[in-house]
Amino acid sequence: MAKSLYETLGVGEKASADEIKKAYRKLARKYHPDVNKDEEAIEKFKEINAAYEVLSDKKKKDEYDMYGDQIFGGQNFHDFAQNQAGNVDLDDLLRNIFGGGSGFGGGFGGAGGHGRGADLDQRTTITIPFAISVLGGKHNVSVNSESFDIKIPAGIKNGETLRVRGKGNSGMGKRGDLLIKVEVAPSPVYERKDNDLYATMNVPLREALFGGKVTFESIVNGVLTIKVPQNTKNGQKFRVRGKGVINRKTAIHGNLYLTANIILPQVEELDEKLVEILKEKLPSGETSSKE
Image 1 (tube, rainbow, N blue to C red):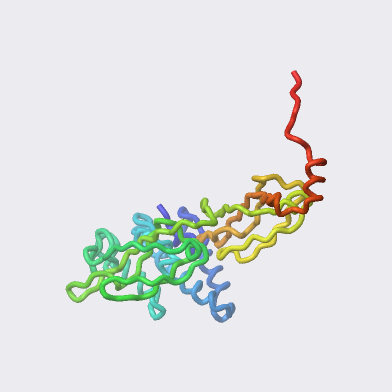
Image 2: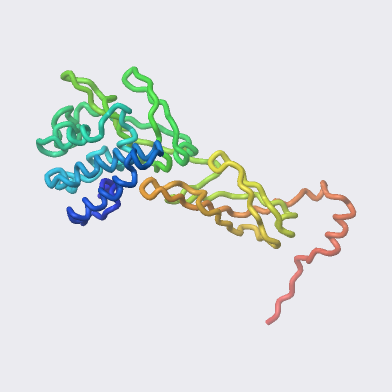
């Protein structure tokens, strides 16, 4: 069961209260707005405080340990936090979620919860382009006669669920959440395995024989220049470090693996003299076997 609040503080699930406090203080100093002026640091600081709000409270921590990231609709805490409206206070939001009662507390519309009630939550499915699943971006959703954009986090996997608060069904003066299952459209260029990407790279015969530079271009990676060695074989693989998909938990990118596809020229397009030389000099397919 995923428990990303611990990852937010950089500690393990078995961390003691003292270890959690020590990790919190270290991160709070690092990302405090008075020290770190980076805009992203402000959001990170908010997430650190909110995570500590839960993990430093035994009752809330026990409840979180029981349900894990199910409390956030199956999302990790970072994505859950980023999907909230800009004026939402994360501390207040978590206090509401863990605010008492059974199950997920007073403010969460999940299993066993009160407040909105699970019956007000609504589910839908969207299909996003492969490039957006890798790079992240916005995607428009139309539901309940409303049309709005949602943020797709970079690195999202096929089948993951995003929660959009307050966009579900209405009833009793309340509004449930919208649970969006994300399906990723297949790519004509890439195959994804975990956080690595695999693709085919066309290599002209000249570069395959004598070595050189080959350009690989796509929406996901832009323009890459790959150096291929002399005598490159068809099917030979090349690794490009850090050009795969980002891991949303570690912020580390996977690799891109390119398989060489040697492109042979059309004989009729070659110079006649070159054709004759090739016929004369290239090894024939005749081989002899020895016992």
